[in-house]
Each structure stands twice: as structure tokens, then as C-alpha cells.
Length: 267
Image (cartoon, rainbow, N blue to C red; front, side, top):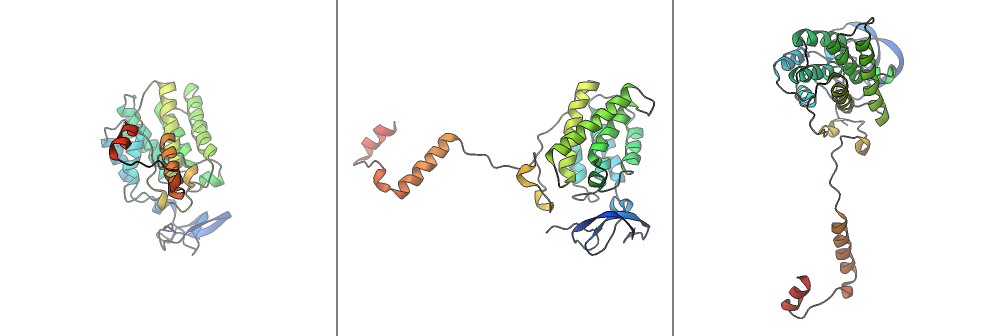
């Protein structure tokens, strides 16, 4: 079992209804459905401590690949296997890559807005709201990039379509949640949608998960980013079967009296 609770490393549990809890770090009291099996609760603000590194990294990267930017942030100390930090990182990675790929954007202002909006989405929204924070983050990215407001026309439509595409892709895979998988899915949809609707082409590296062992609820072979061993080709399978058969029934194999005759057959 991998570590989940930031305090005692025990697994997390998700309640059906909100309960008043006290953060084990800052002692702020607030309603929540999430705690560890030993009763420890860590508020979103403490859980995402150190997230200011997101803005610094996205301001200085020259990458046009949001997945590459995301992977670098996922390796930072503030980022856990699961958590609301992903609700900021997805949109921030997309904004930085969009800007570097030629999208017109005031990047410092955009990242500051993304940070503010993303942090407003609580952990567990995927299961309790029916709206994964990574998918919402992709929609926030589109809203910021296009300057959407509740009274906007085209930008409003694009932002909601972006959220719908991301959530549709995430929902199609099914649960349990995985913040890494859902972030990859949201970004993949956003890169394609941005090219289609905004005419800005970001780069996208092949996505392969390297964190399966850290996820207690990994869906294994159902995950579209699971590392899979290459399957043997048909000819190789035939050879394997022939060798197995000869081991079981040596009499079925052809025997040679000398090397020259054997080489003639081989050639």
C-alpha cells in the first residue's frame, strides 16, 4: 500500500456527506468529505503549499509541449500522486505551451488568474461534483486564453466545449480517479481542440505513465497510458510454439547426420 495521508501515510477515505474537520497542519476548521482512515484532514491550502513554483516554472519554460511542462511540475516536491494541485497545473501547463507556440497571451497575468481559479476547485470534485478538476482546468485555460466572460459569445461557447471534451474523455475511461491519468487526458483533448478552434499548434509528446506503482487505485491495463510490453509478432509466436512442441516430443524434430546437410536446408 502506497502512502496517501500527508500526516501518517495511511490510506484516504471519502465520506458520503460533509463533516466539520480540523486541518492537522494549520488547524483551520471547515467541512469536508475527505480524511485518512486515522482521522487526519489536510486542507487544500496546506495540501498545495509550494504551488507558487508553478507560476515560476511556467514563466521561464520555452517548451511548446504541455505534457512535458506538466511532467516537470509533477516531479516538484509540492505535487502528490493525487490532489487539487492538478487543478492548477493542467491549465498552467496549457497556457505556457499555448503562449510558446505563438498564442497571443499576457502570460504572467494569465498564470495568476489560472492559479486563482484552479485553487477554487476542491479535491474530490471528480466524484462529488461529477466534474474532474483536471477537466475543469482545461476549460479554465480556454476561458483565459479567449478572454471569456459570462456575457461573451464565441469565447463562452469554446470554453464550455473545451470542458465538455475533457470531461467526456476522462469519463469514458472510468474510475477510480487518477489525477495523473485525468490530467493527461484533459491536456490531450485541449491540444487538439486548440489546434481546431484557435489555429495554434502545440507539441505533444507520447504519454506513458511511470507512476502506476504510486497509485493504490491504478486501473492497470484499462489505463490508456499504461506501459505495455510489446506483444510478439505472429512469426515469433509460431517459433515459440514449435520449440515447445519439440521439447515435449523430440521425435517430431528432423535430425541431421552432418552439418552440411543441415546448412543446405537452412539456406
